Length: 186
Image 1: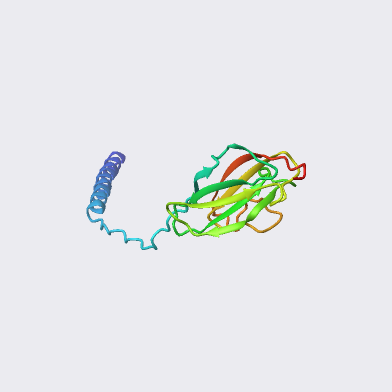
Image 2 (image 1 turned 135 degrees about the horizontal axis):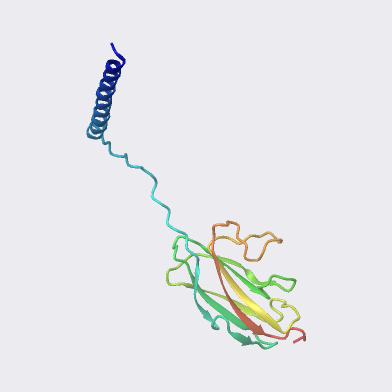
């Protein structure tokens, strides 16, 4: 066989095998698309999601939140807040503070912390403040704060007064300024 005949034979073999290879690739692609089996994805079963935790709310205050209240050295200044929480199963915890924020040496708890149930219409919590009933610091102006939480407050003396035992809890607060000179005796 001459060289020319050998080249012609080789070319014919390559052309034939290339067409055959291309046909096989197309057939494989078409068949793989047609014969693909589609299986449905199985459902994922899980517990119902827990309801979201929302912050408690202060829906009313007397006197109005942010007010400047002038007290009398011989009288008692009452403060009231109406509180609720969108999560009806939550208990509410209430803390009344004087001279907070910021927390400092004059910060005092006005009344013992209160734990209460929750009502969708709200519940009133109150604190009466005078120079003698809570031993206010001997200064002339006091910031009165009510803090409402949906978890118990931390009892650690080193913690911030708003710290909770459970870090996923929420707090809300209202503040007033009480002008009451506790530097003089009644």
